[in-house]
Length: 135
Image (tube, rainbow, N blue to C red; front, side, top):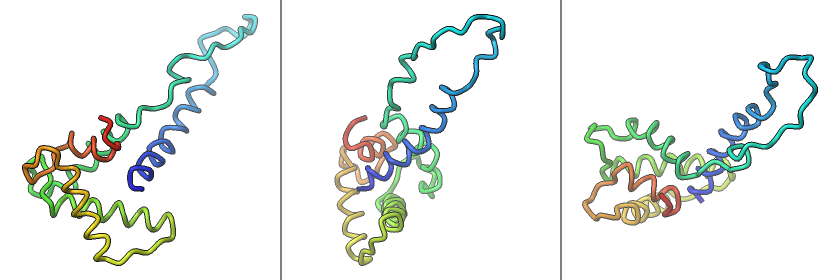
């Protein structure tokens, strides 16, 4: 569900920018030139890559949760981030979850995200985890 929330948020952020790009008038074409039919560019037809969007979010937010500045997240730092994401999700969906359930979920997420089993989460591990394993 967190992955869905992140993906939805990323698309909501990217969609207006993509729409503005398609709707901007071509100011380089003189007004006297006959109208040419617009061709869709491959970039406009291709949806945003969710892994790249997640990577951008991780790059932006990572320093706020990496409180010791070591470039990786301890279980406490990671759990703080996941609890914050779960709080956003529950607020958006109107659900309420017991604190113990959220803590257990965050602990399970840490185990899943720590693919190299070194008891820390790196940026690449976090991007892969939040992207649903694609990254």
